[in-house]
Length: 335
Ligand SMILES: Cc1ncc(COP(=O)(O)O)c(C=O)c1O
Image 1: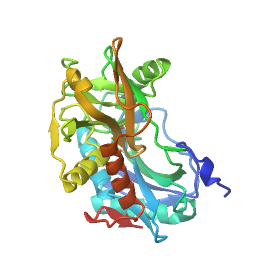
Image 2: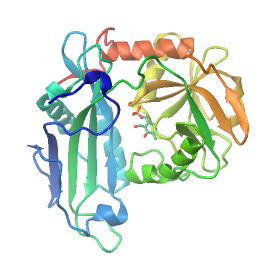
Image 3: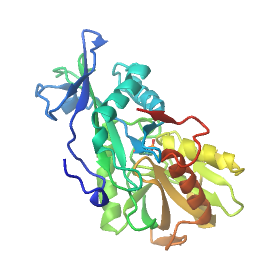
């Protein structure tokens, strides 16, 4: 193993092992560590045809004290089970889920970026239907795998605001569809709108509500948060966005700081009135948004730096994750 921690980005790296479970005859097997990254399955596997596939994302951090801890893993277990229920996949026991996350991180502990490098161990659970299925139906067999790999800090050389492109011609999910769950199909559907954003020099797409396109939904892989001019934390309430674990945690930290927190429908027309806007999620923690492009209109925030309120929230969150600040809510789980 020869990793230059300072050069790590956010991408796939093969590590020592992944842990695998399979579901057969109505029950999940014991987990086994595998050193290979390949899998053999039928060309008729359900996942290839009818898309029973879902995943999660979380990070483990090397703390200041040299201990490795995972951020709120039970939240991922719960969210993946909510996704599984929606896709008619068999739920996975929460306790075993968290233990499996710990086990794969422990087995790859030398791949966890050292404290001070700004990196983390990205944990990726994935589940899919493997049973041969030709008529549209749920699979009777599944694979559940957790892999883990080191990722670099999202911000190299300081936090820089990113620009967002409002998607008006596509939706990532339907009003009563799969927007609130983390199924693979949502991401396939977001590839083209994300490309449109990138082609317009915006790293992130901003989706609006699929019913009326008047309200803010979320970014491609992160939730939308804003700080109002009177100092409130504002984030969309919508039936078509993913309930972000990062957003839930930032809302708590904002409350701890005495900020009023509003989770409510946010009209697109409110955008120019916000003091700060950010995107939050596991990969980026909290990225400030510099400009939002919407149908020829440009809404500008601070395009040079993260705003003071989002910076405070960012510092608090990363402080807890790296063990620099007391974990007062019991979010960090030692591996
Ligand atoms: C569509 C979408 N929204 C929001 C998020 C942020 O969620 P979390 O904070 O749990 O990573 C993600 C990433 O998982 C995502 O894919």
